Each structure stands twice: as structure tokens, then as C-alpha cells.
Amino acid sequence: MSDPYSILGLSRGASEKEVNDAYKKLAMQYHPDRNPGDKNAEEKFKQINAARDRIKNGDTHEHINQQNPFNAGGWHFNFTNFGGAFHNIDEMMAAMHAQQHRRNRDINVECRISLEDAFRGTEITVNLQQNNETRHISVKIPAGIENGNRIKVAQAGEQTFPSMSPGDLYVLVHVQPHSVFQRQGNNLIRTYSLDVFDLMIGGTSQVQGIDGSVLELKIPPNFNPDNQLRLVGQGMPTTSSANRGDLLVSLRPIFSELSDGQRDLIRQAKELHSNSVEPVQSG
Image (cartoon, rainbow, N blue to C red; front, side):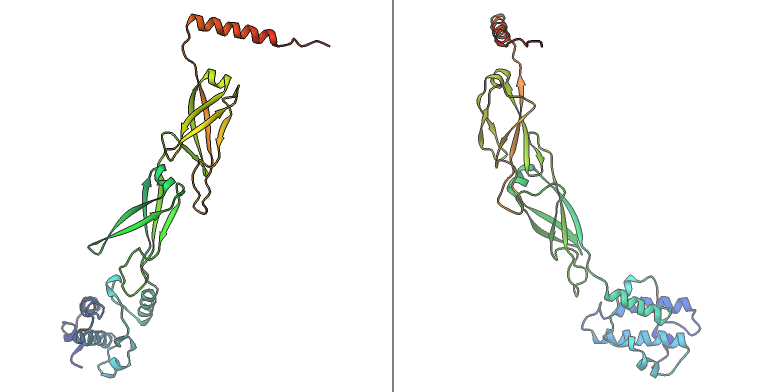
């Protein structure tokens, strides 16, 4: 082997820091991972390692290169991720261990959908910028998904290291609040305004569901507005089955402005009601 200092582009007597800096620079330049299939770069990489070891150990014999297993072509390290040149074999082994356990990272993103999208299920596109390229990933959001759920797309995450499995993509779903419906588990709750007389007399009315369908409300006489009417199977679907929750309707009474004649009729109805109630007999 020629003079190890000249291989590193240094003059004899260079400081340890100069040797390490030159070694790091050249190792990055001629590393086999950066020059795949380039036999000249691979040979140069071996010479650089051997030269650095000879200078460090003060050994000028050629066999030092042959006995150093870390100069073999099968040992590939990505030196760009280390803070400086290795100072001993322990550092080299630690770096090798870190390289072997390196993996492509998972990627976490967030999306926002409407309650209608959560009811029907939908599909979104996630755009990931990596290595100066944009990847467009379609993500299916199942019907019935709840606010705060995460969707995993296997091997759609980071792909920085081609020799290793890609990371995963996780999509955090935010379901936006709705102006009419509130969600409670798989049930939906909504308020419906109704004339106070309809609450007292009873009857039928119509209300719209989350899917746009018109649903019939059967209102019993003297309905207490503190209670709710339940429409079975008109709530949100579940992600694990074909079943749906229920729609709970709260009725809010509307008090219309009355004419004098209407108020007189109500007074008469009140008097009739009072007269029909039997007085409580004292013991």
C-alpha cells in the first residue's frame, strides 16, 4: 500500500483531527451505498479505511488492511448520519448496531370530515412529500367511524431506506360538529320544534334523518318535552356490523301568539279541566 497520508490527501504529521476529518469526507464520497456497482469506489473505500487505521495504529504493514474485517465490501455504513469519525472499534461496533436496527419511520397525519361523511364512509387522498417526490395515497374511511379514531395504512409511511420495509401511515380522523345532529356513541340526537298544542293533543309529524330521509314522528297526547322520542335504527352505523344506532328526538314546544278569542277558549278549557278534577278528601 502507498503512503496512508497521501491516500487521505494529507501530509505526514497531520493532526488527529485532520486525519479524522479527511477520513470522514472521503468515506462519505466513496461509500458503496453512494456508489452502487462502482468497483473503483469500493476499492477506494477500502483503501481509505486501511489508511486511517494504519495512521491511527502507527502500523505501516500491509497486512493491517487484510486483517480488518470492517474494510470488506459486505460491511456498508451510512457515515452521513454520524457526528464524526470513529475513534475505536467500540464506536464502530455501536454504529454498526445502530445501522442494523434503523428502520423507516411511521408517518402521522390528520384529516377532518363531516358527520355525513362519517355516516356514509368516504375516501380521502393524503399527499406525502419525501425525497423531492410527492406520493398520493388514497385512504378509505369506513362508515360509522368516530371522532378521534385512527386508520392504519400499512407500509405507506417513510421510504427513505429502500433496503428496509417502509413505515406505516396513521391517519387521525376528526369528525366536525354538526349543526343539527349530536352524536352519542352510535346514537344521534336532534331537537325538533313543535307547537305546544300538538304536544298536548298528540298526533304525527315529520323529521329529517342524517341520510336525508323523511321520518314519521308519532307523538302521544300530553307528551312531556323533558322526554325523547326514539326512532330505532336511524342513528349511525357501526364499523363492526351492519347495525345502526337510534335517533333520539327532543321536542321543543313553540308558544304562538294568541288572539283574544283564542285566549278565551283556553280559559274555558282550563276551567273545564279544573272542574273535572275531584278535590282531595281530608282524613
